[in-house]
Every structure is written in C-alpha cells, then in structure tokens.
Length: 333
Image (cartoon, rainbow, N blue to C red; front, side, top):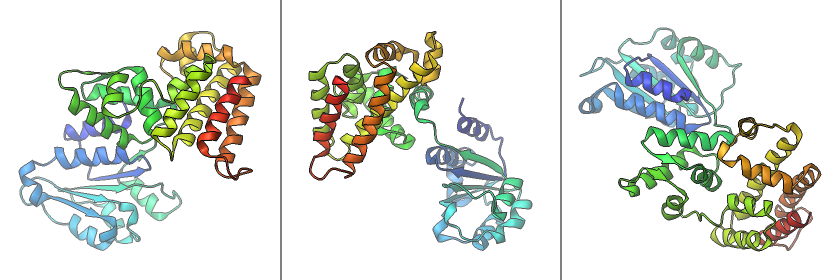
C-alpha cells in the first residue's frame, strides 16, 4: 500500500488529526488526501455550514487563524481546506495556532511545492502538525502504480496496457487517473484493460508506439521502425521526437544496467530494471541485439540528436527527419 492511501484509509475510519500539512510536488497525492478529508468527516448535508475551502492567493495568515477559531454549526468538526497554501506569504500569525489548535477544527493545508527546511515556518509546521510529503513516483515505478490504482477501482490492467499509458502520458498521475476514469466509464461490465481499450478510448495505437518501436529495434525490423516513427510523428507533430527519444534513452539505459550488473534470475532482472517480469524476455532479446559497446554508443547518439533537435549544430533538419535518422543509425550501429 502506498503512503497516501494509508492516510486516506485513516481519515475514512475517522482517525483524524487537527492539522494536516500536505506538501510536495506530486499534486495527485495532495488532492486525494484533501478530497478524503472533505468527504469523510462531516455529512454531505452539513458541508454548506461546516466546510470551508479557501485559496492561498485570497487569504492571509490572520484571516486563516480567524476561520480556524470558529466553532462548527451542525457537526462535531468544521473542515477547512486551504488550496495553494504555498501562496500564503507570511505565516507568523498561525504559529500560536499550530501549537494549540481548536479541537473542533480540522485544517488541511495543501502546500503544492517543495519547502525550505531551514525556515521557521517549516520548523513550526512540522513540529505541531501531521505532515505528509507528496514525493513523485519514480518513472520506473509508474506501471506498478497504475496496476495498484486499477485494482483499487475494481479493474485489472495488462502490463502492456500499463506501459502504453506511461509512454503516452509520462509521469503525471492526475492525467493518468483522468484517462483511466474515461476508460472505466466506457467499459461497462468489462473489468480488464488491454491494449485494445487503450487504443479505443485514449487513442494510443497498440501497434505504433514507443514500446513497439523498442521491440522492433531489438529485432532489427527497419521497415516497422520507420513506419512507427512516421505514424507517431503524424499523430503528435509537436512532441513525437522528444517523447520517443526520452523513451529510447530510458530503454537503452535499462539495457546498459542489464549488461553491467548481469543478473541471472528473471525476478532479479525485473527488480534491477524496474519492470514487470512479463517484459524480461524482451529485454534479454534486446541485450543480445545490442551488446554493451553498442548500447553505450546508442546512448551517446540519443544525447547528440536531442541537442540537434534543440538547434545545436542543426539549422534546417526537422525533428521528424532527425527521428528517422536516429532510428536508422541505431539499426546499423
């Protein structure tokens, strides 16, 4: 279970704290906990009286303290959720409240940013409140998180389908959840998400994507590689190059790790690469196609073409042409 879910479960069970300080850069976790506080402590009919949602850009610490000091009208608690709390400039007026909060107030501060741990604010807030650090999920753990999330909403997702979502969206949990919600709404009684559902409801081709490009490269299938690149570029003219090269760099970095560490067991390989064991055979095939010295050269080549796409030593070649050129050079290396 992920840490944010443990906090949500505690709130659902009415195991609550007077002040929640939700900080960090993974806004999905912060929003999920704030939603749980909004929806599980007081009744829906009382929200008009005992739920206050305010924004950091519209309020100062003095005003916030005054709101916190009010008594609830209908419920044992009043709930105050401060969105964008990082926009509040001065916190001094809240320091005494942090030390002695109202027993009938539940305050959630949604501080969507990193915080300077040297400040007096950080020392006060962490000393007297429940602190949750919303750290981003590591890129290599995203498919695992998608699987976990789908199980929580009663769905099963194939490993290949999870990879497609990650390749399409990147490290953006909120966007992933939106797409998964869209799929869930359209699936009816079907509870299994495959590449077919990803293609049908999100629009990501199950045949022409970065994941299939990697497989085609490992098989030295030049025709399919170029066709995938052309279709991906036509589908997303503005981002295809960087989306694809980022994916390729991650892929060949994994191959590099596989060559250097040389794990022998399938589970050891999966743990090293941060992938589902389902994909280990694909990486073993690729490792044979691209030995260590070639993998090193390919990583250098990807970096070189990334700079070219940004205008370094390149004045006229388009990103689409650069992508095809890069793929051909990987194939003949």
